[in-house]
Length: 344
Image 1 (cartoon, rainbow, N blue to C red):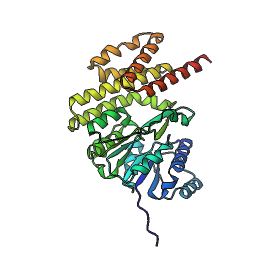
Image 2: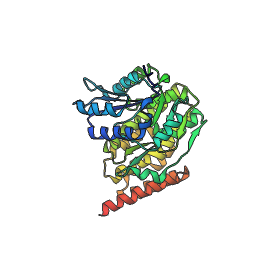
Image 3: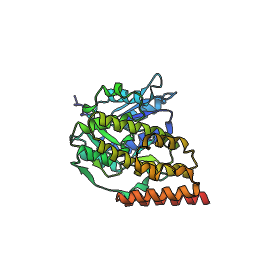
Image 4: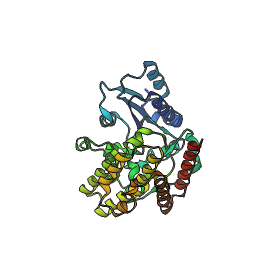
């Protein structure tokens, strides 16, 4: 009798009413992990109204050596789906992959190199794309950073830890209590990642772009006002549990304001979105920060023709200060592309 191979990695895909995107996601898993088929499993947990077609399930079972499809009787929301996926998964390491994200070619290299090592989390560096997912190759990096202290790892990843697909984590480090402790957050995955990060000092930061996410995702932009509050509570959770001190807290929140919210604010204005709710969330959480009061507090009082150049300058300045030349070039390309579409 042939001995069953050990499952090292469980790729868990929670989904809800996005069949086309789910197919694209599963196809990317197949294309990039064919040669690791024996040591990986793929699990789909479906909150959708209608189940996946039986023939489609059979096709995926032929493609993947280890494939499971679970149709939830009712919509148990994302957090309920995460809990179910984690309890079912057999792998030592888990990767929660959002149904609208894809694996990129470098994922296989990152996984095959690290899968049999011991770590708490492996950060996978997501990159956004529009229509051409191969654009990331222009900005590809090949480094892996090991030996970072847990605090420095957190500083380097920072707000990127809210992305559902951003980390592979050690299932043995997941606390069952976390699901009852964190009930109403939209970023439960961030708490899972941080738990695993602080339980092991052998964590890996991959600078390769391993995950692709669709840039023109309107739902993501609409959710940023939720993420502001949720991330703020997450940072306070780390302080309460003595994982970070107040100095680290101020660094992380200030860094998030400079490197993420300034950019999101600008993109929302460029897309003619109503920024009132987004700005209100920032006011509530950041009004005690001098940096916010000086640079952002009253920015919405000015006309659009002033706000856009001003925020663009801030985004470029902050990225230049961080040594993010590549990120800056990408940002410039996005602004040029936007201007072309506006003028055409």
